[in-house]
Amino acid sequence: MKEIEPVLNGAGLRIGIVLSRFNSEVGDGLLSACLAELRKLGVDEDAITLATVPGALESPLVLRRMALTGKYDALIALGAVIRGDTYHFEVVSNESARGIQEVQLQTGVPVANAILTTENDDQALVRMSVKGAEAAAVAIEMTHLLKAV
Image 1: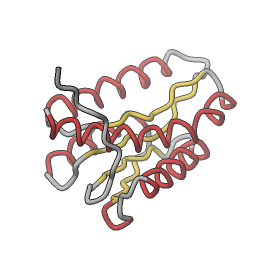
Image 2: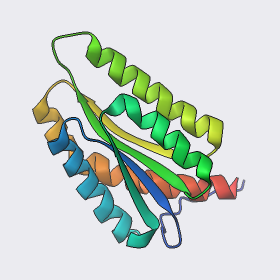
Image 3: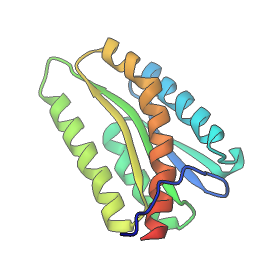
Image 4: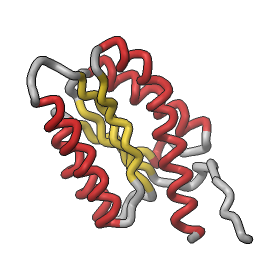
C-alpha cells in the first residue's frame, strides 16, 4: 500500500488569509497564532496576503475571489461567531461554513476554516491560539496533499 505522508513545509507556498473584523479581539488572536505558525513552518512573510472583511458572512466571497486569481496555494479563513440571544448565530455559523466549503470544492484551492463558533467569549479566547496555529498547518498540509494525489 502506498501512503501519502503529511508534509508541513511551507517554503515557497503562497497563502491568503481572510480575517473577519467582527469580534476583533478573538480575530486578532487567531491571526497572531496563524502567522506565527506559518513562519515556523517556513512560509515567507512576503508570500502571505491578508484581507479583512466586516464579518464571517463576507468571508466566502473574498476567499472565492482570491482562489480564482491563481495567486494562492491555500487560503485561511479566520474569525469568530459567538452565540448571542437570537437565531442569527446559527445563520452566520452555518452559512459561512457552507460558503467556505463551496469555495474549496468549486475552485480546488484548499481553505482552512478557522472561524470559531462558540457559546461565549471565554470559549473563543481559550481556543483562538490553538485554532489559529492549526489553520496554518492545515493549509500547508492540504496544499501538499492535493499535489500528491
